[in-house]
Length: 141
Image (cartoon, rainbow, N blue to C red; front, top):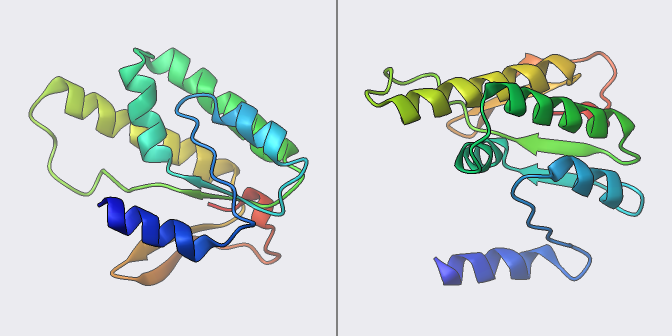
């Protein structure tokens, strides 16, 4: 895995900056958008896991989503967000897995609702979910 990570990092070039922020991604977007050409958030599913690990309950997760959407709306550069669809499988047996699935779904729904473009990728094929007539990458998902 270390070799794979190193290979991906080498492909990015010197202009690529990686910021690892587990919880406060809205603050990172606010700050980085003043100098970045584009921001890639990878990924909202991991962010949801981090929120749950930090013992955020649903109201706090909703507040975190609100802060994120605010940062996306104010961003001075395009922001692309990556997430996983976790609702296609069976209902998880344990409560933590069900909570994760529900919160990941909530995050995806709230972000997709404010995005002007949403694309589901299945087997490497892009499936437009929410296309816009005029593409604005600042609000893309």
